[in-house]
Image 1 (cartoon, one colour):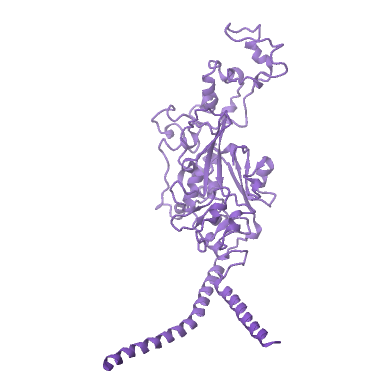
Image 2: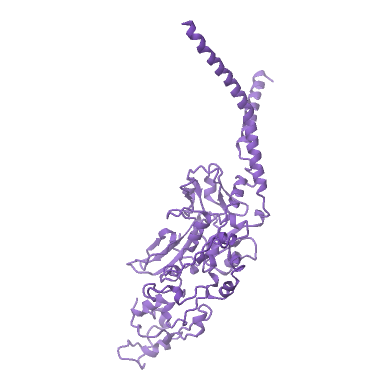
Length: 242
Length: 264
């Protein structure tokens, strides 16, 4: 082997050895143990403090309220939604008391009317609904049955009620078209009101021979609309909309 | 003149002596120091071993858009649990309000991330349909943010959660740019990248993420993807599922049910 090659090999060996040594010392120690990252970073994140105690924690002491809450309409609402993070309270209950929002502004965060909320979700207009009274004077937040089950459909179906109020159907009661079982007020999603299914139902007012005021628009059921059901073209809550 | 030179030389010699000593001490001390640091970190890592085994889990989240009421409790809980700055620019999760007008225009807003409620919808063009969409890091199976990190400070764990190593992040913002969902931000206090961790510190203790914990309508579902008996798998079985920006091949692990086409 020529002398130049030997010295070159030595240079390469030193260079590569240096690189390996440098990599050994410069790489963080736990790097690559679980993947292309520092495994110790995961441990740092795992050790971050927990602030929300979870659903089961509250019932350990507050079993009375928990048993009421468990079967109430608010059963899906965890205690910590309204009362805030509870880990500090579980560690020293007397020193860290949790707040209970009593002011009127809090409940409308969920129950204030907003058209973007899903239909059927109970909503009120915070301005018009018993103004200046805190919500808890009438509603128990742990078991929020209204004092009388909603008398008006608009208590929940505000969006439809507002639309209907502007239409020619404003004076019709919801129950004129929707047969509503009483249970619907207790279990709104499970027991649903009926909807009219036939052309003859609308014909009860709008057919040529119907017994209704003269100014109600009339159509010939035989020829008008062919095979379609009325609501496929006319929105019953705002029939004049096109 | 000579008398003046003599005293000037002595300190020079002293300095050269101490420099030699300094260099020898340094060359000896440096490896020792590195080794001791390394030993300390290894010890700290070993002490942190918990019975939690990340290989047994693979997490995802389901969001039912039809159940979201836009109350913003998830945003508030997330900020509290994870110590996210309260200013309205920093969110690990946030709620967007979509309003589609009869003309087909889509208006999106998210004042303060939805945390303090939404103002009344002011759309003079009318509303065709409108709904809330909670957003967060999608914990992609093929995360673009991880690919671009130049120092390996962001990574996907064995249980499928994308995390940031705060100590090695250099705050270069490549990942903030790379995320197609806008889920990352730079923490103004540490100047490092921050993002949703699925509340990893809660998962290892067997708790649910804070946003799932406080969602009052059950719009957020969390669980295992790969086990058959998990709330998430049941959710994906019972709903038609859509993910955000699937065409980017990010393979997101946040599954939306009842999602509108306008949501991006």
